[in-house]
Structure formats: structure tokens, C-alpha cells
Length: 325
Length: 250
Image (cartoon, rainbow over all chains, first blue to last red; front, side, top):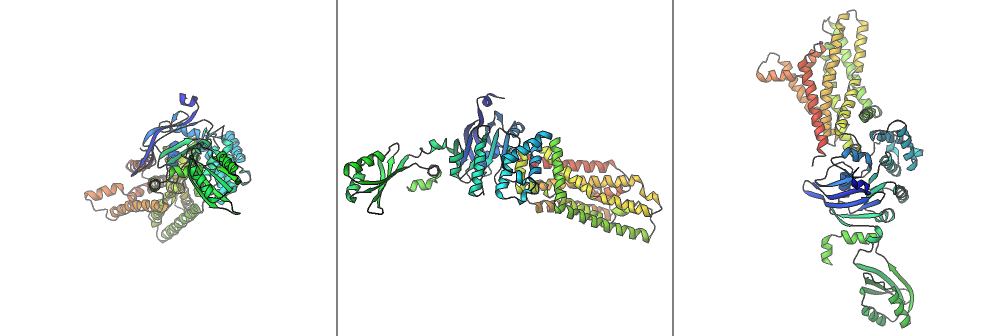
């Protein structure tokens, strides 16, 4: 194996570009994923998530640029790469006429597992994915949740180094989403997992690293925690005060670190102030100080961090929208 | 190789677990049965010295089965997988494009051959009730089955090719039916005017599947026919392979 594999990089993508007739799906994409990480590929529909995954899964080649998995080139060493990845495409296509166990055995055989090893691995992944009770059922008659687990079991069956899941929670109910999410989380550490999604809480909860993809480009690549501090607008602080309105308004206007604020009435004569502070400034002690020195009553003081959703919307907002502001 | 056999097994299994496979088997049985009745009627009406296999093939039902069953067998091979998306899961396993193409073709051809097994039973029945054993020359039987195999290989490769071009089974079957019919009608054109000897007719006679089959059922194994079927089968398999591979062209 080459040095990339030894230095702990599972995926290494360099200037990857894919053009279809007439439009560019992804353009000069570069990123790296370390071994054992769970990485979320986040982006609105049409951002190039599926295209990126299909290229990594050796389904189709890139127009230019290179992608390496465990140090192997996805185009020239395609067979070697395919042995090392488990891929579940969007919408999780399955042979609906087969029984769960037969399907998994068939898939494992295609991936080079035969005999005892085939039987062992299949029963192991069926346990892991909770498919024990439906092993003799025909896939076409299973619920979405079970089908999704069959797809996951298929991706896992040959113990791949890298698991690529395209929208693994599409069409599931909240309980099923939670189960799938837990399963994915349990894979981290031993496997490298690349999932694509546009459901933000999913990324926040499961992923070590997030790549935000928009119009074929990477807008940000960081841990979910770090990403939340990216927007240049700082934190929001909400305070409910019992104070004379004019006095409060004057004070608000005099604050140097507040970008904008608004005051609205709240129940019981209280006034509700919404502050947006400059990045890196925590307004809470300042508000408290003011309340104490002016003898205002303070009944609520909270700061809200921007959620990943805010980050996402902020980054992927269409440009026209930006200009209008 | 093991992956290839796994795929062939899967292809065959689809025909035998889906109702459409049994519908096809019943339809072919029915047509072969009718041709048998017609054959027996003919034999009762007047004595004949032509081989029983030739008598069978000259009924229209033989060509009906050949031309209609073939597109129905092959239409789903690639089109179905592309439509359901399983083509993507298949092509991301460590299996070469060539193995996939050959397994689809082999599965279809095996099922096609299985469809013709009842014909053997019919011949045995006729043999049981007739005194003249000379009409059952093993050479004519072998020739007939070789002919069916050759035509089958040609039609299966043609059908696999049209199926690889589209994700719609209807389009796949109609395209291969149209191409098969075209070849058959050209053959028929040269068949009905055997005395026409201009250059075009001469060419038609060489590609005439009716003429070819006419030799096979009489136990004549002409290498020109074999070369024709083997090379056309190879051509369509090659084209199919290129279509499947084209996904990986930059």
C-alpha cells in the first residue's frame, strides 16, 4: 500500500471535476478524510453529493482530477477499491423479489465471500442490523425501515474499510431515523463512513467532520462544532427586562458591540430585547451589569448559538438573496 | 469465475421465481403443442419421407416462438436493473463489465434452451407411435437442436444488446423484436422466390435464417451458418460490452 494509506488517510480527493453534457456537477473538489472518521456530506439537492459518491464508489469516472481510497486510485485500480468499499446508493435499490437472507448471501458472493465465511458474515451483519426476525421475508414486502437496514447490511457484509451511504435516512420515520443513526454511529472508529444528507440534525449528531457542498464546490469543511462559529454575525442574546421603554431604548442604542437590536413588549409589562452582537462578544454580562446598575428587573437572559441549520442556510443562500440584503 | 456463476444462477432464478417466466413457458408449450397437432394431422393425411424435425420447423409456430419469445426473455436483463437502480449496486461490486454481460447472456440462453425441451418430448411421442424409425435420424435431431442453439444465441445477444441501451423493458423488447422481424422478413423474401438470382437476393440468401434452419433440420451442418451465428453473436455481445463500459468513458 502506498504512503497515503499509511499516514491514515482513507479518502483523498484532488481537484475532482465532473461535467455532464451541458453542466458541471462538481468542480475542482478537494478534501481528505482520515481513517475511522464519520464524515457528512451536506448540501442542497443538486449540489453534487451523489455525483461525488458515485465517483468514489467507482460507478463512474471523473472528468478530471483524482480520487484515492486507501491510497488506491478509483479509476485505474477500480477493482481493488471496490473490494474496500461498501456503497449504498440513493433510494437504496434492492432486488425486491429475493428473500433477505438470500439477497445478502448473493451480494456477499459477488463481493468474493464464499462458503463458511459467507454464512458467518451474513448472519453477523443481520444481527448487527436487526434483521434476524425478517431473514426469510421477501424484500418487496418489507417496510421502508427494514429495507434500509437490508441496504446497510449489504454495504457492511464484506467488512469494507470505507462505507459510503447516500441519503441513508431518506423516507424513514423519526424512530427509524434514530435507529439508523445509532447504527451508523456504532460503525465509527472501526470503519470510515461517508454519508450524504440534507437533514442537519443528522450531521450534528453523528458526524466528526462536515463538508458543505454547494453548486459543486466545497464551501466549508470542519467539525460541526467549529462550523457553528463560522457565520460572521455573532451570537443572539435575548433579555426580558422590566424597565422604562425610552431609557431602555437609549441604552440599547449606546451599546458599541451590538449590530442590531429590537425591543418588543412581552407579557406582564416586561420588554423583550433581541440583540445581535458582533462576533466574539458575549453580551450577557453587559446586560446583567446594566440591569443591576439601573435597578431594572431581569427575568430572562439567554444566548442562542447559531445552529448548523443557520450555518447551512447562511452559506448556501442563493447569491441574489445576498445582494438584496 | 465464481462471481460469474453466482450471477448466472441469479439470472436463471429470476425466470423461475417470477410469474412472467412461467407465463412464457406456458405460451411456448402451447405453441409447440399446436405445431405438434398440426404435424400429426399432416402425417395422418399423407405419407412423407421428410425428417420429422423438418416437418416441425415448417410450421409457422416455430418462428412465432423464435421471434416472439426471444425479446420477452432478454428485455429485462439490463433494462430492469437500470430502472430499479440495482445496476448501480451491481456495478460497484468487484465484478468486471465483461462478466456481467456474459452472465446476462448465458442466463438468457440457458432459459431459452430450457424452453425447447418439450420439443424433445414431442419427438419421442411420435417415435413411440410410428413404425418407420428412419425419420428419426440422430443427425437431424442433433442438427435441429444445434440450429435452435445457434439462432437462440443470436437472438439472445441481440436482445441483451437492445436491453443494455435503455431503462425501459418495453423499448428493449420492441427494438429487438423489430430487428428480429426485419431479419426474418428479409429471409422470407428470399425464401419465397428461390429462383430470383440477382445480387441482392444472393446476399439475402446468405443471411436468411430460414435457409439456415432448413439446413440444420435436415442434419446439414454448414460451417458458413455456424460462422454467421457465432460472429453475429460475438458482435452483439461486444456491442453490449461497449455500452456497459461506456459508463466509464470520460
